[in-house]
Image 1 (tube, helix red, strand yellow):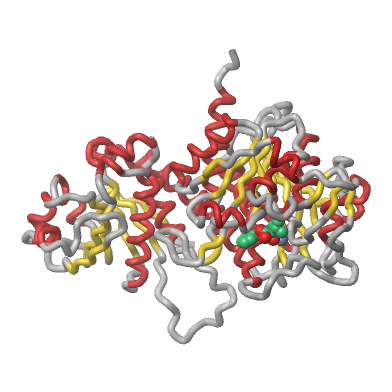
Image 2 (cartoon, protein in one colour):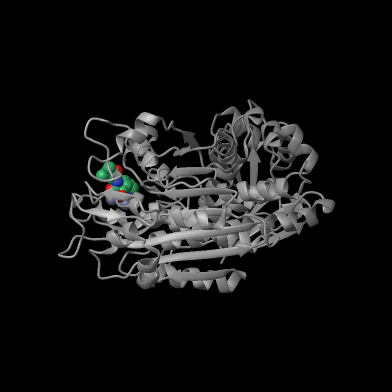
Length: 516
Ligand code: BES
Ligand code: ZN
Ligand code: ZN
């Protein structure tokens, strides 16, 4: 694990391999940067003048400054225009800088943290989100330096890795608040890394039982309770939809229940439900081979639920929170469900399975029914549910659908700050009608030609929602990245963990306000 250290030293006397300075976009450096530049005989100014560096978002310039200050190198990283600054741009810039330092073979990277008052002046946009500068930098740095290399034989020459991030405090009085910001940033990055690890693990390791084992580990480490329902329990509860999906597989399914008791005893919890398909072949409605390997990520929702619960417990959020993960493989075999089969769900509603590849909504149906037992104050489900969400929103945002506009808006706001964008889609009576079956209560896909695949997926889920506010996040386009992004490496993103933590923390705050 990368070390994070706070140091309160003068910028010019701080000894480090690489000192990062965040720069806003401007014609000529001003403020602290201009002041500093006098020590470097104007190299920063001339870089701006020659347009080698202009402070554009995620632009970098590495300068050797051994002769002028105690740092060996100065790494300028751009934030874009100060007035347009957001927490996420800062997170991106920190990630970009950390990765640049890693690629340059440095072991340590230091980030200069400006004084609180100059943050308000220079990074006007950032002040709006009211987020801690330090926490955002720690998040960006740690998230960008994540690697999944468990299966790599130790190379002769190991790629160079950063082992320490230093946060250089400008003002002594800021150190104590920085301490808690660093600790929060670390906890979040650790939870995201845990989710990414689970998602990245191939399905011959990450089986439903493996997920259950990990949930038990998290429960032990963070003081949560964990219960795992087995096939016998599922039969007893009548979870015919989840059992139906798992029928084709040799791997037993698991229904994971993780509980964080941070609130008072009778306080209704927030329930987070995550799709836990550890591999989605499509079943008898088999998927084409291209990129089928990526379907090991079909338990992203479940992994994010487990990561979120762990972070919530680590941060001691004063709220009751429950994580539910219906976990199963979706395999074709002689025992698998077939198109046309009818399943009876835990709710009692029957489902005609017209496409075995629309399996996520089946396992979620039983989990959403189970959720009602908690009389929750809200239920949020996360699922890599439809390829259609990629058609609608690409990889830039997850779709959010539900039965409560306030909850939707709140989640969307949280995602804006954490850089995990959500975009709402409607859920109209016509969509609900589209998943009604001729011979059963529901069918798991709409008829051809109806279109709106993400919405009809959501409409199917809605049939299993109890009397609680609910939102469904379709994360099929955002939980896996085909390209490297400023703080998300190729592959698993862990999308949702930081957004949900922000949401839960705000819920906890509202909870503590006396009810009027
Ligand atoms: N797991 C897939 C959705 C998916 C697609 C996730 C791409 C990540 C990337 C889901 O189970 C699925 O197969 N959905 C079908 C639904 C259809 C049969 C109605 C789809 O999107 O094609
Ligand atoms: Zn599928
Ligand atoms: Zn799936």
